[in-house]
Image 1 (tube, rainbow, N blue to C red):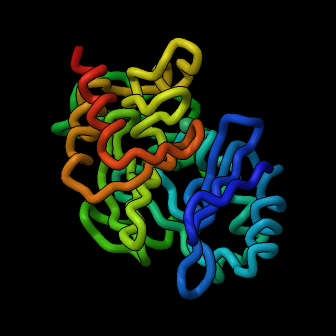
Image 2: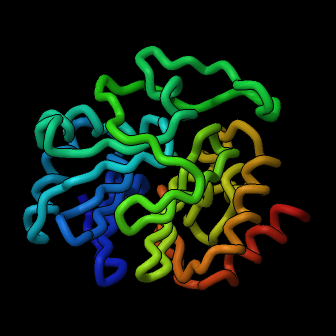
Length: 234
Ligand SMILES: [Zn+2]
């Protein structure tokens, strides 16, 4: 996996050139945000963390799609179930099941829940809520790509780990409005209007940079977020 240091405390790990997960250093070790595509990457991720001088204490999931949860079970078994927290939210649980339950819940906007949902065997050990602080991260609900999608803001340096709420390929775009040369997140998006609303909500947070599930990290403060909103609203 290609490893790129993105901040004092953050590293981007890229699998196959287009799938990112992130190691973020906290006082007790590393939080891992998403887990890449497959169990094959788990050993790499653990070794990279070790090389950076720490152990993975928490696995934080932005959402249940296969390119984000593929490594969960292999990581949990390699690290030892009692040694690592697995963090998600209540809405994601049915989508993380094996097989997943794709029914919409009451009050949710119309649309088909799309994309690969392989499910995981591991049980989340902690379910976060909107606005909750989990370690160094403010947990922000950003549904639209899929119900239950979470973004995590490292409040120490303003890095938003955005999963697929936003896409970083080429330019920053809202999921559902990604460019023609990287349409994958669009194909897998449940409701573009909800995705846009979530992206609008992000304007109220002190964000310096966007670390997305796909594409390089984008350093722009709110400028590129505003540009992506106006592009999507056109
Ligand atoms: Zn993805």
